[in-house]
Length: 112
Length: 114
Image (cartoon, chains in turn red, blue):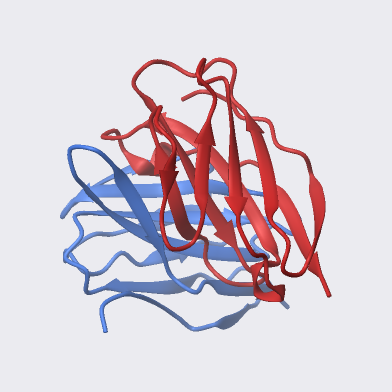
């Protein structure tokens, strides 16, 4: 699975959009980009995933660059409850999810 | 409600003692996983199981053991051979479709050594 690089921390004002970047320059053609988040002392929660097209669901939007070497998770209107560690993971969709590498992620702090 | 349950939420272990962490899921998922998380760090895979009566070692299996006798249950035993067991333990399960394999995590068990 491709390695990802994320900034260790970011701040965002409540009500503003939070844009979390992820670099995955060695991504392969059949690898998806997944995003999870982990609120303090809880299990990680799936947010969104995509292959090459931009994706949107009720939680977030995922923007993947045309060369697929980087992506951005967008929380359109961040709330205090969005404060969490966000993990960007790249892997082949149908392989064993247990081989996913959860690095240190980005700690997002939403401030009032 | 469907989901993954882990018990207990907190667990204390004495030196030289084996302890077992419970993980149960009613999502009808085939695959189940155990991760360890140390403070300020990401998740590291201990063991995983893709089917009943079968499991594989992850990246840090030494000092741990598992069993998968039932589809819905995947208990983890932390043995006395694990010299630094204090950590947050997370269980997960997943189902595979043609386009994605998303993991669902339990609430975690925090293990402390006395």
